[in-house]
Length: 562
Image (cartoon, rainbow, N blue to C red; front, side, top):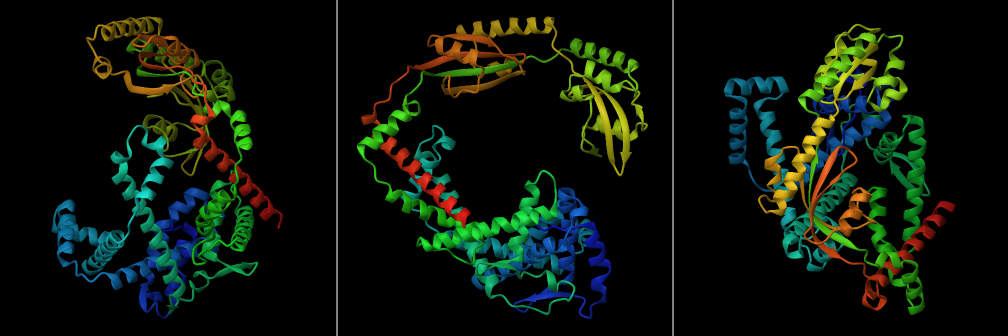
């Protein structure tokens, strides 16, 4: 379902003003003679208002961007129910009674249930109707899903394409998971197409005058292709969300350009013999067309031995197997002790006594452990409830224009807060953060413990999994395979140590961020120089894919020139 968006301004005009003037005030419109009540539309708009305002701000609100999406979503819901009603012949009385019983039980009884109905604007009949609709749609989905089949070839290809995700699991182990995912994907495609066909043939009548201009319609035409306001509006919102500086006019301009480019792409694809379904959105048309074009390009690639040899030599580093190791790994993160936290608190208290609004920026640069210290401790303006509780309470109760009189303790450390301004539940402030740091005494104690853990692992008094029980600050990573100097995210010096260690060696390494890596080397794979004859199939596949990508880039360049 598409997201429904609205604003406070529209809610006030829409709900309390315009619609009260209509003669047929209970009807928003009909979908194939099925009435959509005005209250349904109003409720959808009211529920969506916070989403839009929080995302973009009320100042960027445009009803011509927001409302067509809302109404299209409602129309889609009604058509989905209609599709389900034609397919599913079942009363659902038993399931309804069961669901109503669970709701009453969850709410605490009949009285609370009736209060819930009133608070949510339901009658018992309207709640039953909504539950029945949901049950019918679920049954419709199950019916469609049961008719979808997945071939062994599709499963094998999905497994091959996602080996990194499945890690060391065999195809047999994940087959059911893959089948379920492929069937669900196919179901979504079937539903999307059925809804698109239903929308094309739907009759929208008895439309309330105030929403008539917001119903799905043609927004503009480009190269003979009609673009609906719903599709245009969705691309506008997608573009607006991606813009760093929110500018609705700029988003509209970019969105129109994107759609025109997509239309040119589809036209080009059709000239190449690709079949597209014009009922689907342009982005979906392109998504479905790309595999067809890929197959065409792939089959056009001719590979000679000379080309393959040259490609292999240019990309040899990709096929050589670097030395790599498998290890068991655990990490001890050294945390400040109670004494360390006390030292930090005392320091923060002392800094607070010396800090004033006038010298706050200077003090932040000198003492703050936060990255914003170099900027004088400036914090981005924040709303009520967006910070941890103690910090939030201080920010919204402290005196404006002054430094908060107490050190604020949070999980991040000790904060000194300067409240510069506060309007409309938004605070402008700066902070000095004094973080507790592990002292030498704490670190020495940690090293002593790590050495004992290593000794116990060597003596087999404890396993890696058992380390967690010895110390809650230890994170057991478990087996990490194929660590090498080129791909590992671990510290380079640590990887170097692992590569040079002997198989079976147990030891520890001091990390960069006050942590200690405890390891046991399990396996070593030496550097292996690739031989083309042994991996010819893989190299040829890579070569073909690269040639296909070149063809795609050339095709895109030709589209952009048009």
